Length: 338
Image: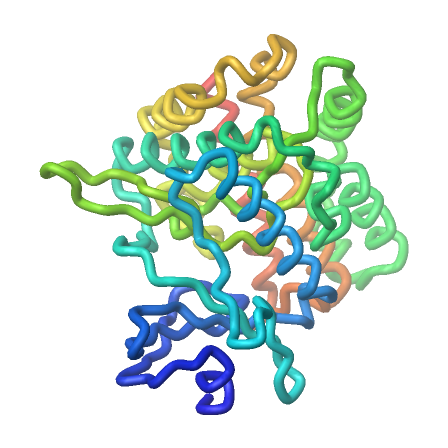
């Protein structure tokens, strides 16, 4: 690590690893120049770390000129003026530490409102930025048509025993194929716009701070998946990860519930920033965003189960099948909100 520290000109007093997040290794540092976050970029998942670096720097430059007061995790430059370091087969980048904290669990509707507001504000403040400038860091990340095709291929080529045991669940997913058609019609509609989209809107990707006795969201973090995209990706991911009272690992499906107050808070928080940006057609698909994302994740989990867990992996037999059943049940209880 000392070699990395030198590239930034840091004399490090203390550093420790943070254990939030699953993809990248993250360190908190106290240096002679201040407090920083140093992070690796997982190049096994993100094949082109330089694309992430490019995107963050493009957005950073735009905000510095057009919204200098917007709180953003600008990349720190090395003594050579670089913002991405390749060292011994790994990639590193650094940010100045922002005074705030991330949540691992969303506890109430007030946090849901603040998080949705921050994700909405992120897209809104970049509404005049040309999203087509951004690199695609994860191709087809939220392409529901592709995910359904992969599901169909798994039914043809996957483990026959696993497929046989999941007949009822396969039938459910096929019966709901209309979500794929709805997705295709949505993205092709003339009133639908691609914008700068975060794509990973779980609660831990918003920083919070206590301000005047209230818990307020102050900025979004973890920008690796920022790409051109549709608002349904950000709203859908919030619905999938924030509304349920248990995680996607819960095997007792009777425990799954969806909090209507959190759903209303997400809607109000996001639209407090994005109402005027969205077309009427897009607004009509606000609820569909949750259906789209939950259904897609059910497809992805069961596809991986049939393919012998080659993508997500499994720490125990049938783990991805349990996750798929969990998401199928989540879709059912989510639909009951309407």
